[in-house]
Length: 114
Length: 109
Image (cartoon, rainbow over all chains, first blue to last red; front, side):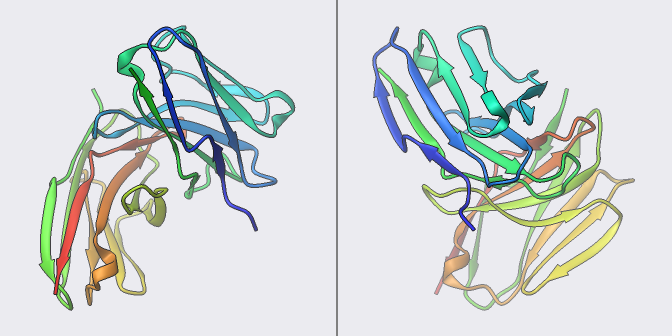
């Protein structure tokens, strides 16, 4: 069974540009989460999809971040325009059940904004 | 606010036992999870405690005391490959994970 995949693995962009990150969850997992780790700090929650609906987006830092999950399969996270403080590692995770105790994480996308 | 506290770094020798503590203060609580992350890799699930007590999975055990808002991860018979970062994470009432800042474990020969 394939795990959670993320693309790209690395992205280097300039301040003001746009970047789109993609996450493919484990097949059949209705729950999809985005997290990020900035500057070696703790991993922080961004948002949670159940199928195509946003269940919780309380962690989204501002309106420069837009997440979508059309069709309830893969998800994209767009940052527009990117700022220096957006640099970090963006993780996607999925789980089969909302109350499931295990979230399966992808390898992350390392975003560097110059 | 919501916070989890864990030591930033722990060093131990191969074959030894190490305990990584985690205290938490969160507005909601369903359970305490532990994740392992090797450099550049994905966080991987190790254990989950929803109720007080000890959960054992091979060389790894995890403990929870809800009344003390405290848990720990116990690693036995340490191996070099156990060198990694270990994160405690609370699953809150909205099912999202709130992570600690991680403990870097270095296993020496």
